[in-house]
Image 1 (cartoon, rainbow, N blue to C red):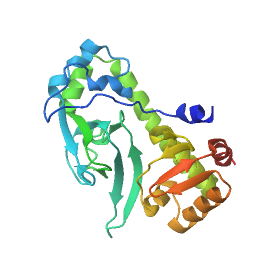
Image 2 (cartoon, rainbow, N blue to C red; image 1 turned 90 degrees about the vertical axis):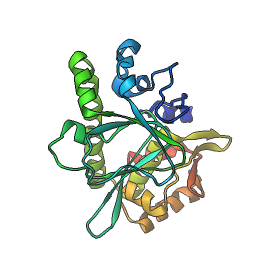
Image 3 (cartoon, rainbow, N blue to C red; image 1 turned 45 degrees about the vertical axis):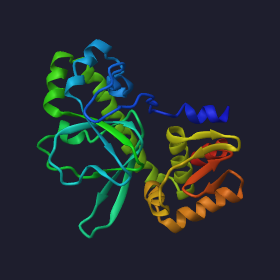
Image 4 (tube, rainbow, N blue to C red; image 1 turned 30 degrees about the vertical axis):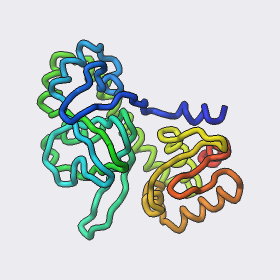
Length: 255
């Protein structure tokens, strides 16, 4: 039952179809239909975009788009995981977010074409990461023919704004263990794999990246992780975490 509670938090859907070769769309299924953005779109209407889709396959560490880029594309993650990072002038790097299959990324230049170049980079977190994208002109021309889809688009963007506001609020009002518990639950809802011991979360993050995601120092986050492990709530296994007691993490995230 507790695993189901975590699963209910998931906002990303799993995609089971993969593209067979570069620049060839699968004929049996339109991959756009698996995204929240196109959830209310009929297959016939979504089919109109198939010929305009571009796609790419990336290895771990490859850049899907880069900070400072001037393209006006919106991307959809089909398979794998992607992290969004921002680099400061002194070359320090901050992890901003992680994307799961079915999620849209890189949309800001599409809706704010005069807002300047991209402010972050998107990097593949694993080999065989698969992404498709649409150019702004194509998407907007299609939206002009199907304006009701814009409502779904606004809902997706509003959800992003809500998440950002909640994260800012968490940084102000929650202590580090609470933020860590909430981060682990979020990762589990999107990437968790049921195992005999509980729920395995292969986050594939360095200690520094996990700390950045929580919004604290590596030392403080490691201390909180050790406390959770000593209490029997979790166990660390390389770049994975096994959650034994998700209910305790939920309770701790609300304190």
